[in-house]
Length: 640
Image (cartoon, rainbow, N blue to C red; front, side, top):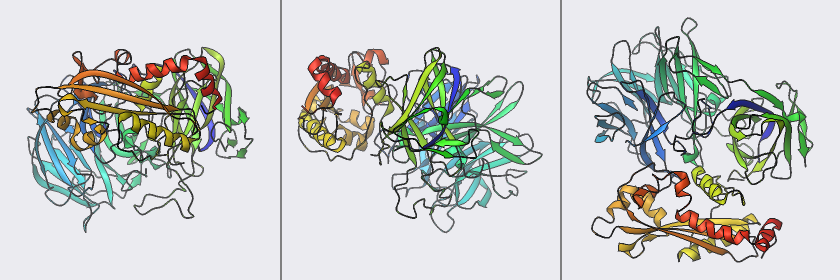
């Protein structure tokens, strides 16, 4: 299932994934090593050289209730980010850097404020304490330093209770390590994620409604003084657009040589798969005379951090009603579109839309897909709001398949979060089109995980398809399949057999294991549960009492062409040893598994994809696929 479709807009911005110089709200953002950036609910500060530092929450794949700590990234331009490691939203202090954050467990009943310090901005940070706030319980937390007075404040919204929903502003001491006094207590209508924007003439406090992962309309309050009287709340984006499907998180003030720009740093949370959440950074247009603040949406924009100037990147628009429909012939009048019509009913591989005559550069370029997804029925911003008044299967997110020039070996997943009736939003993809005007883009539908949980680690899918070199293309589908106890082969075959029955077609299932020789092969196939409970640091400590640190990484793929075929197993093994974590924690336990002096997390993609346990298993699968009789059986979809 996919949403309704209206406009297909092509942005002719030539760039690469790693060296992108544009800011693209809602896209997949990657660091300079090619890994997906995981810094959710974070903030940005600068060091003494003017370099930007981004700190945010690392979310593990398949760990919806546990955070992986705080990751740090650095950048000179706010578009190209380098991974700096696991640190533990910072503000400047006199002699050291101080980090405050919201401390909680997955049941959300701790409601504390954490403090850590470091002599260097990139860390590592030393944990100091986790304490209750001076006034009451504490949920979402923000930090603010008044650039005129130099005074710093911590602000937070309260948790459940009689005073739930209030916002407190506490002044910090000179070292930013303790609260001095309560500067303000405001009854802010049960709002959260507070942060403050300061201009030369005013202040703006921005908060969002408490609707968990459902996006809502953020609002702003304006006082003349930080501890003064605040205005009535006003929305910062067009009504119904839910802050362009984002939650307010933090802001950044960029003082350039030609103008000062204020950036809204929002998160586009994903309810079913939070590790796939994305970032929505937008310029804020502030008029102190009119006392207004508005978010400026841009599909792609260019920001010069030296001058402070920004501009939208212009593209060419291609209308959906001019495309070719297959399996459907449904166009509806839409008076809010320039074309006057919207294409609806795109679903799977049988009901598709193909737009042709699209101009390309021969290099990667951004494509903005404009759509309408009216599943949510505009359920509102209140915590008890519901989109479902008649038992329908509404969805917060739908996913489309996108193929370029008929290349079915490389199918792209396009996420479309909910909009509302009559509102059209965009979702970006980075695509490589041939140079010239003879390109086509085909749009179909993919499962969003509910209609499966739509879950996947994007880095893992990229890695698998890179190793397979286009021999076949793997698309993720998350299924709720209980895991049996048994050997690696038995577990993989059982999962594959069940998945093939559910999918009614070809399926490949992966199961990874990590075997400690000193522990006779444990954790083995149960590594996922060990990792969830202990984390990488705890896994490393399991071997403290043993001199033998050797281990083996195991990857087992099971393949079936359909429900009638007994699954085939392809297994790869890589020898190494367990060490303290090094490298970005993108793939679970890979930061603690070292092979020939490098952890798997530290390895360059090209090197890793030629020797890893996953590569060895997929290489065996490739050899099997290379046999003509096997390829034909797969392509025809006949059971073996």
